[in-house]
Length: 303
Image 1 (cartoon, helix red, strand yellow):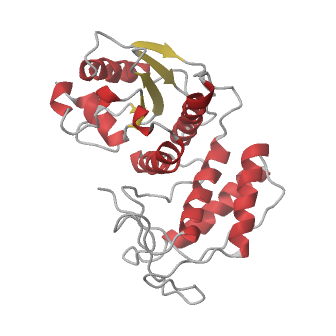
Image 2: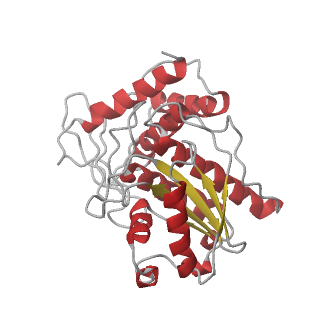
Image 3: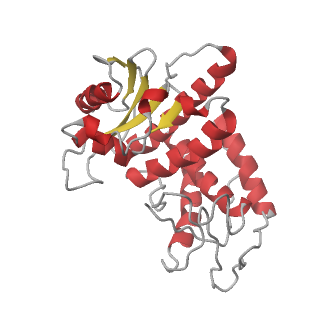
């Protein structure tokens, strides 16, 4: 097992210990997301994993970093599924974000064709639409296996955008080496393309191509695990609006209880972990190999 995979496994083990606690013992609720127990290597992501990452990116990158955050919409998997299955896309105007007034739309594509199974399918890919250029950039980590589904979504989206058609370009994309990394790679592709768009606000240059070695599934799982643990360690009972994030005691022996209104202090171990995460993202592997110890678990609610 490589150093990178060992670190991913240890991070997942930490999260798993938190998740095995009683389901009604709520420690953290993060907006509209759920399901963190499949971040381990070789585990397949469902739509809730992608929803978490899109929610996080929207709040931490789009609204926090962009001068014009309205220029980007990260459409959630459930909304893309609804669009893909619709017989008349115009009927969805009341439930979808204002797509006509944005510049870039990110759409995670799934090959689920069963309208009765909202979390079905076997592969994720990514479609990024530039509404100004009437162009779609399609990224698939498994030899364009979802291209037909992307074309269906693009055709229906064109009706909502009131344009004759969207021209799709199949972009060179790093390929997965197993049957389970598509979801995490879509999360990382979204991060990568989003960063390019954010940077282009100041530079004026935008290249939608992705370098062959730009995406690492293992590092992606690590990054998402670090992000979850950092959210827990950084905030107290609530963040932003009421019920955005809720923290409560674990009740386990040896755990540090968190009372309502109190902040959870970041431990030295957590600080070291955050620093290691930065090193791991830049170098691909880390020299540190210690497990993360944070005595809390995550439970989220999907709306």
